[in-house]
Length: 149
Ligand code: HEM
Image 1 (cartoon, rainbow, N blue to C red):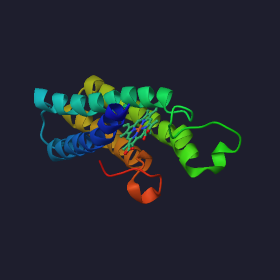
Image 2: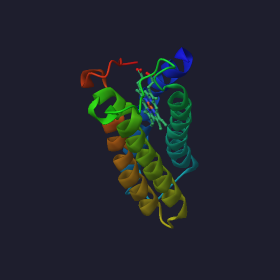
Image 3: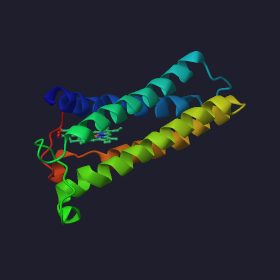
């Protein structure tokens, strides 16, 4: 299980970096009239990495209930416990929303007709995704007993 937690924890940085790269790339090319294979791949990798994180998260979720030594419990009063509430609800809702937004953004970047519209879709939807991911990560300063990596 530790391997899954370590992978899930470290991959957050790859997710964040890929999202920022995709957004910066889209902003810098918005006014150039082209949408290349490279652009498509950057946007695809950012989305894929979030999907991988979600899959890892589901594995962790299934094995993380108290009793198996985890951070999740739905026992009486769990909503009043910041850690149970965070991992049992907030983290999941934020990240599933992030997955929906990144997927819609990627889809729109494929279906829109003009390059500027494609880049525009990435900017809007990936920016919302980035905000959701940043807000949904259990950063060490939130007092949930997690680290930076
Ligand atoms: C982009 C999506 C996601 C990111 C970036 C992310 C990031 C993280 C990070 C940084 C941690 C802290 C790990 C540590 O240092 O202990 C964590 C923990 C956890 N995540 Fe996620 N997560 C994502 C999606 C999900 C989803 C969708 C689920 C559940 C379905 C999930 C379930 C968990 C669980 C159960 C833990 C606690 C693991 C433990 O410490 O035992 N995650 N996540």
